Length: 123
Image (cartoon, rainbow, N blue to C red; front, side, top):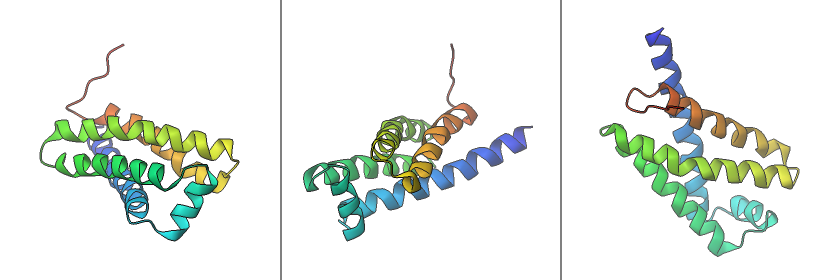
């Protein structure tokens, strides 16, 4: 069971890093398609750059977390609101082709925290 939990954790981590990595870089480097998409959601250039920088900071924390696990958890906790915000924005604008990645990121945030050996959730 521990092996399966570990495999799920690291596959989730890799996909989480991939999605937030490219999304943040597309925003920070102002890729035309990303800028148009964010503009259609009502975010101007300043907001798009702010969101991109926030996501990039979370991605950097995830990468540092490979060596110091507490930073990985902080990165996940920082990126979770961005995932929820993306899910909300895409649902509100009926962009269902982007909705799935946002939903997966929301679920993977919880999966990553729940399967991490250094993080405890107590109710």
